[in-house]
Image (cartoon, rainbow over all chains, first blue to last red; front, side, top):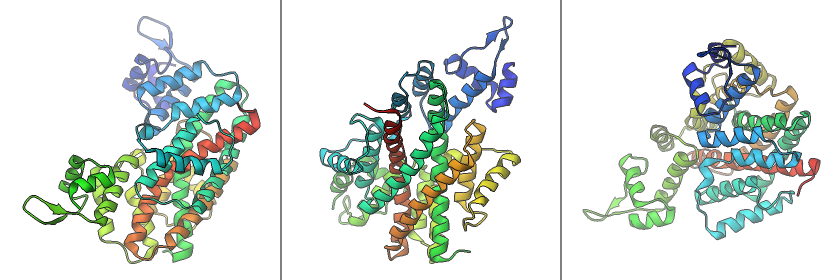
Length: 208
Length: 208
């Protein structure tokens, strides 16, 4: 297909597509003349992924490039795949959060109590630790009971997430799914949580 | 306390505190001389809230002002409170997402199938609808089974959230808790989900 059709199929403007191509976020099309190139279904998929990473996950162009690179060179071990996906998706807003040793120790204890099998240098562990430190610093006390409930809910979702991933045979396909899946379903999960709060609240306080 | 101590207590620089004060995001201190004002514990709380709204939730100054206004004039009905909190927290990244009528109908059906008691004009409903539309548009298929699991997890969390909120007696206190709680615990929930994925994945694929 021509670039105009790629634009129509993805809803991304031709100008933005040219920018993605220039930045090598999307592979070049097959040249058919000096001024025209041909694009295929893999381009449609790639454009959607890049847009989701930029618009929904809020990743920088640099970070999107890391994702694209990881996809072109997927790991052979299926377990490593998740660590790579999480590393490229790590939340930018928490990167610089400085926390003192005391805070860090408290959140490590909380995480250790879950007894989950996760390496010490896992990006997800650092991300959760930063979120917990930040919550404490800004005055939100998450009780042990509430934390345990969130952990149960997270396990429920993760079990389904990994089940869905298992259905995919090739490593690049699985990596793409894990990245796109997390980026696009995080807002769904947060939206569902808000909606569920309104539902539960209506039952307790009476609604309209 | 003096502004320098307020800065120490909150970890927010004096320059940023002065900016918050100028923008009326934090109420003025009690003047003790022509050049000095006195700040109390309520200022510490307010500064933390404003910082969380800007840094973690990524709200604009305009939107933070809405939150501050809502807090100064809380609703009398406890159920309305949640709608107000969700309205001020609505995700900016989804505001402009244009979706066609077909997409909107599909996500409405999915939400209706939950049979939750939520008004049609709820902000959470619109937010979830936009997230679902976006996921579909960018190529993520969320199966009915997966959606049902996410909904179950969301209900589990929401039940605990409303229970925690019930412990708070005054409406302003509850509104502050709901806003700060959602802003600061969303990243905790997302972090837990990632960590749980690694744990489940380690069990299925073998880890280090």
